[in-house]
Length: 366
Image (tube, rainbow, N blue to C red):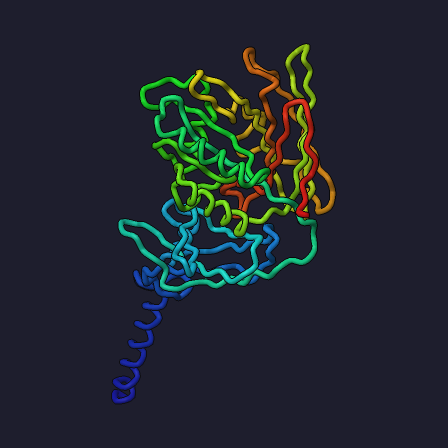
């Protein structure tokens, strides 16, 4: 009997220790039995979408077992043959209108920068059909009367508009600079600069379609033309824009109607600017001065519900012009915005413009 006890006792003790270990766990084991190895990994809820600019991939990024997908120090990296493109911090969704193969990895900073050990490949299939809308770009120029280098950008933009008529709707945002107060500055200028376009400091600067981009466009014509072509290739228009404006001279009020038709059912926002050609001095003229952002938000005002494919939607806004604004020199710019990252940012999908008091119909490719 003693021999049997001496044989069984060690076995029982081993089983008890094993049970205690499995119940208590240790610092390297997770509740689900996985190991918290501190390695950054990226996964996706799907790896195939349609190139409609609407269907999206949502990524999950984990450091070991810690979900850092929405942390302010996490960003996705789009891996291209030409090099890597960093998406905005905190962005975890991706949509596109361009078919192809897209490869993603992630970067996270916690005391040091870490890059995911793996990549995720997303296949984007083409979408057939739809109206071929002419793609006009919103060009956002940042300038100041105190900026000695800024006229060079204006000269470049005029040259591009002459060579590619009808391709750019330019809105020029003025700001105080170089110790000088700019009489044409608005609060919208600084809000765009700090909150939407990367908090840049130097002038001049130029942006397409409310997109920060990967290059600092200043005044080099070849670079601005190259980025223009990239914008057309990488972000094709899925909607058309028409504009109607009616001016009442008795109270200096303009009523603006932005009209939208779309190839896809999507969420859109309507952004309206009033711009004026201003002769500041006998030496300098400013052709595209933004006098007012008529929309209530710098990211435009959202249409009620989704805009259905093939159905026209409209948005109407009114604005009373300030004394001193020359109606004959003013234009209305209407942009339709969409999101490609789940609502973190909004960019211009297409734009149209007209002289204040007049109208502009939808534009189509010939």
